[in-house]
Length: 253
Image (tube, rainbow, N blue to C red; front, side, top):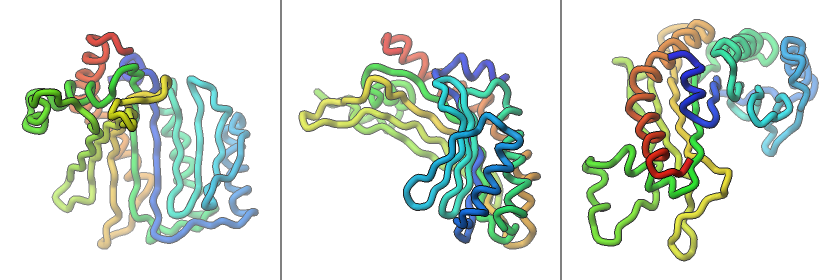
């Protein structure tokens, strides 16, 4: 599927890369600023720099409601992504630049890389109970919905996360998360903010191996290809389309 097809299926789509390290990343002022200045040289529109709690540093574009890119450094991870990119390459080129720079500017050795994530995410606007929509779309008729047959029963907390090994050594894994934003109030009624959405994220993670040198750029390219294939062949028909179908049938979009 082309990226345009994904954006038609949801309210917002994002593509993200995260590198998880074994040691803490640098926090020195000069190092952080030099790294972000190098990023800004390639992407001049990224001019919003700030620090969050726990020494997490962020550089992003103005958060246009429809499209923007970001990079974060904090603790033992560095991540970057684009919301509603026009092409996959718009997100991939940013991630490649980060992966090229971190060995030299942030002193990240191949020995220091614990894992690399490639994530595609979707948000689906839904004005009703997210849990009921997820339960009907993804659990209807399965063993996990057995208690919903009881008189007066209703879906309260349906936010499944599934992790699957994709290789014999289990160093390549896929994680699927569908998150409800409906909370349970004191009266037991599901409530969420009007602008909240059901979120789906699909991640292909590659762990480093003790038997060889971790090639971050090479792994990133393979993970992107695999993630695109699995999104088109597995995630969209089996998860995305059932969710959008139930939301549309109930008139909750």
